[in-house]
Image (cartoon, rainbow, N blue to C red):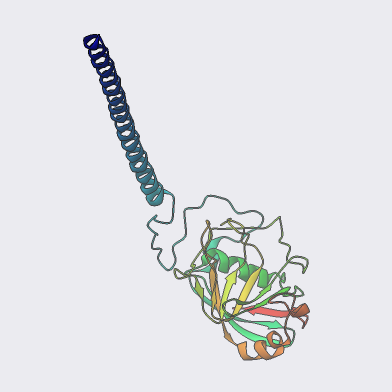
Length: 262
C-alpha cells in the first residue's frame, strides 16, 4: 500500500515538474519572440529615421533655407520675359549718357540727373514723360518715413497710386545688389513680382532705404537728386503723414509743378 502511494506521489511530482518545465519553456519562447519582434521594430524605426533625415537634407538643400544664395552684380537682374506696353520710348534714345535737369515739387526745385547708361529704358521713359509734359500736375501720393524706409512716390495717373494700364515697360535695370537705396536715389516704382510693370511712377529716397527684392528682382535706379533734398525734408517730409501713419498720403499736398531735362 505504501509503495503505491510513493509511486503516485512520484508520478504527481513528475507531472508538476513537467508542467513547470513547459511553463518555463513557454515563457522563454515568448521572450525570444518578443525580443525578435522588438529587434525588428528597432531596425524598422532606425530605417525610418534615416529615411526622414535623408529627405530632410534633400529638402533643405534643394528647396528650403539651405539653398545657396546667388550673388548678383550691381546691375544684374533676374531672367525676365515680358514686353513693353504702349508708346514706350526706345532705350537707345537715352543715348547711354547722363542727363541733367530740374523737377519742382510744389515750390521746391530739385536738381536731378538720369543715368542713360546703366538704366537706358527707364531713363528713356522718364525723359519722355518730362518732355511730353506728362509729369506736370501729377501728385506725390505716397510718403513713407520709418527707420529703414524713407521714400516719396510720385507720378500716379490719378493721384491715388493707380498705374496706367496702357503704359508699362521692363526689364529691371541697375538694381542695387545689397538692396540698399542710398539717400538721393530716384528709382522706378513697379508691381510686385513683375519686372515689366515699370511705368510713369517713381520714388525719391530721402534717407538710406532698404527694400528687399522679390522674385522679379529689385527696383530700377534711374538717377539721383543732386540738390534740394534739405528743402524737400523741411517743406514736405517734416509735415508728416496723414493720420500719423508711417506710410500714406503726405500731410502737405505735393504736386509736380515743373520738370525740365537736357
